Amino acid sequence: MTRPGLPALICTLCCTALTLALAPPSVLIVGGTGRIGTAVAIHLLQRRPELRVVLAGRSAERGAAATAEVAAEAADCSFLELDYRDATEMRKACDGVDAVVHVAGPFVGKNKLEPLKAAIASETPVYVDVSDPLEYIDEAKALDAQKTSALLCAGAFP
Image (tube, rainbow, N blue to C red; front, top):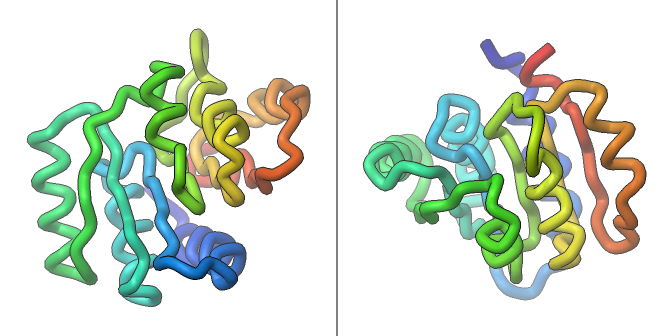
């Protein structure tokens, strides 16, 4: 169950950081085909319909349903089939986006830092992770994120 203010917090963080962009800002939502991902996309697009929102997930079928749900409530968005645990796929997905919102968790184990590492490597200005356990912070602090502002463990899960 999500906290009612979580989509609003994510929207504020992403939109504030993206206001200086010349082209319509782009947001990649990893785990975008789930309940939290579609809620975040709807919230962002209702407030900023010019945003280019990409829902990323592992299932094209769920992607089609999710993009239709978001379009019915807000505005069109696109879908990218993506396994966020794959470093190469994740890095490619982050190239050129203005913000990454990671809601595909919680996850632990192998490759758990791939979304954050990819955002840092591509110098994505904003990274928001709402689904990881607090232990994730210690590992993430060791990464060199000079051009990426990251909000970790933002609270969708305990």
